Image (cartoon, rainbow, N blue to C red; front, side):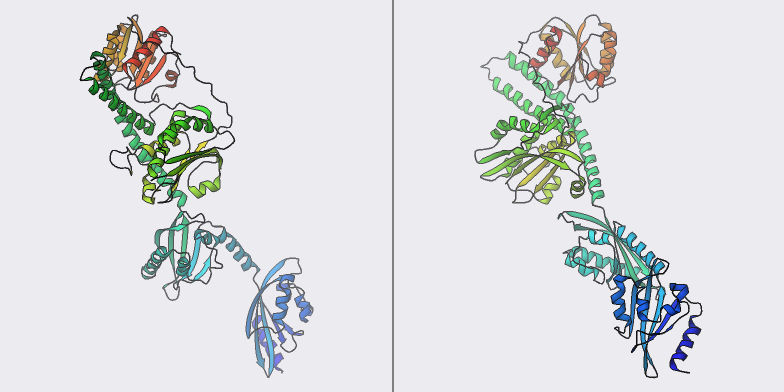
Length: 634
């Protein structure tokens, strides 16, 4: 029996009904196949007689794989080779085959022994796995205990912002070194060593840099896989999760909660101080009216009034920050608003500073509280002025801006839509990262003692948020500062009509009866003196319940009620709702350091209600009372 016959017999006994196709050919005559196992029909759909010529076999190989395959099976391989290729099955389907080629010598004859396995099912599963693996946004990297990467998905490339070619086969720690993440590389190495020692998963966080050179926060989970034979960790799976957006949201929530707490505290303090200032200004005004112009006390009284006025401005700032000031929105073109404020802004800066305006050509219709936006500009210009040492420049620029998903992802804030963008920039000293982190904190200031309250940027932040806008700061030490303000654009713009200014009326008193409800003793006493000295009859009450009782007793006498908004038992709005049931035509003046937020909407919109913010100078109160009683108030 020849060597070939012996080999064929051994192959036949071996394969039986197996799933592997065996092919035997001589290396010197590769075009003529000597033997093909009988299961070629069952597995590949070919008759034995169809494949005894190599070209007959090759024609079934997919054209994209054909030339490479032809070169290999004609002897162009090392001692052992493996190839995977697509095979055109006679049933019309494409199959994936894995073929292993070995050469050996029998009786001085060299043979090529080919074993062919259908791996279509495995290949499809592998493709499905690869697709699923790469579709996961989280970064997944599989590596061994020597830190060599075995497998990695596209998410990992994105997470570490890697574009340096194939990662498989590279050392994980060296990859982090390449990216400049030295601190992170050291941390990862330490925790991997812990994992290899205690075989416990590790969870930690690192900070990387995104494609926009901004910080990116990553949660990392490392999981050990043990070898079944050696019972030791030989593979580690690393999952890298981008939690930047989550961290931004958590920081914003924490910041908003802190600001809300401080705002509530500020509002409460402002309310109490308003009452004190109302009394101080009122009594000082009485003294001022009663002493002569040449009195040695005149200067002291004037200083009391000036200091009290400064205190009132500080209270207004606190109320703006805490959003307890009434929001008076109006439609306007942002460019016109800035132009109208230009003279005031120029007065704030010295001759050594130039301020430039670069306003876009198109209108920027917005719904804003004009006074508040002017306050924002004043605060920002004031900060820029203080930041400039020597000669310098400030620029105010406006433009149309569209916030989209990419902007939100890149910056961590915003809502999609059209915005008016204000950019206030200067070439001052700039800010450190530490200052930028705290810039919006109430009472935080970098100015010298007695040079600032630390409320300027807090107020800017609060006002912009109240307008459903956004604020961002770009600044570095020694490189100036740019403040970006984003205000929502109106879809329809109509300029507001100018308010009709009422003519100034001389203050005069009267004989009418006025109900005054005020829980603060000093303020109540002051209002009583102001009205009584002007000739009015005054009925006093300390709270809402007492005010209602007094009104019922004197309902036919009372012409006007002056009510504090916040009072014990019943607030001013509740009192008004009840007394106008008794007298539907009754007029009311509401006094408060707060806005009208706690009062029902039907009260706020009533033509019978007038609102005055504390502290109210006596002259203004008398003027308002007379206008209401005479029906001359616009």
